[in-house]
Length: 154
Length: 333
Length: 130
Image (cartoon, each protein chain N blue to C red):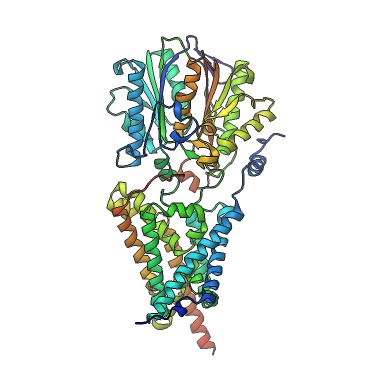
């Protein structure tokens, strides 16, 4: 068999030859670390509610605290070790969003505080805001149209 | 010098590799080849403020080390061929800006070391008495430029390779008693359509095999002529692929073939996945390990084939496949 | 003010939160391992999915069921964006679509920017030890 006959046969051959990620182990670690981070969030949320904050503000406090913790751990050079172990378990919660803002900020510090830190801060997380905010605007507009129509229909 | 066959150049008065030197980072100095390197670093910054400055310092200090070691004065060196992975080869040009030696910047991605040696050998056969060839790479500056910020908590897939922090350098000379560079086989660009930037070994292996087989056809040699055939940074996966491809073309290289990226790290204890990569992978392993083996006559004939992936982060984002290249030099004593 | 700790450690709620949050992360992990998508793309997929499900009124049920297990993952960030936009639209009309999303998530975004800047002031990237 000649693996480099065509790019197609070579790609198939390479896929067969390349080891796969240990997906069971990765999913298990992602599951419990992700679950743990969410549970910490839930505990903070419950404390806030007990203290009399409404749901909206409590949720914001949870976000700010988790982002703060994540930024702190990133600053201590620890978050990448957690991320290496947990994969999506630390990426998918808001902690991963925070890490993706803090890590380029630190990395590009060497290019100065304005164009380095300020300019490169959103190299990884920028798309999240662009797509998230754009989708929310579309959702809002669709809701507006849908709502007016249903009113006129009724 | 004259061209033989399709791509190979044979030297009439083969240039001698007078001396080599190597500096490597902390991770490499915990690897299996640690004792062969001339200098090992305690940390990746080496007292500098940025990764880029650190990489420049590594290549600069390595060249100074080599000049001291070889006993050839700076003003006796006719020119330098050097290159690295950073945009516009800044490590080499910044590292060499105070040296007052005519400078040729070379880019061949991770194949730069052998590309420099090839051009250096041609220069020695032509106008020069002494030529210096050098290269460097740095894990952190390469990650920053090609992948993600260091502190980003992502997982590296099992096919990914670890950029070697360090530098390799060699002085070629008209006069000397070997080891000699007898042949060079510059490689063609070979692209088999691999797009996964985390699987460089697979992208470069076809280029390696193309250059290797062309070298055999041009010189009339076969794999057993060499004591060792060494590729630059195919890694564990690329090495297996290379063995398979050459076998399908009728050459068995399994017994005397190895890869610098496989040799420099211990896969199990150092968690480097598919092995080392980067310009300094081939550069430091040849300068540190194989050159000593040649000097001590433990190896007599080796074929060094450095492999490179000719892509950048823009081309991968635009969905381009990864063109591979491989340059070969035959070194004999 | 006294805190009723048995409300804080509502084990049933915490279990639902743990499992839901964990499962959302497992979906992300499968995407990472099976599709070779970069982290940025996965975050974009999650936030967009969350916003769409939020807009359709589906994600709300998951939030009611799992609490922080649904709001802490990035889909929850998308949900907050969409929910904010809808609430603001129903109060102020079209202009609300542009205000609501960021207004509802302002705390998180501002915190990330500020802490990111702060961390870069006091800390330096380090080599991964492995």
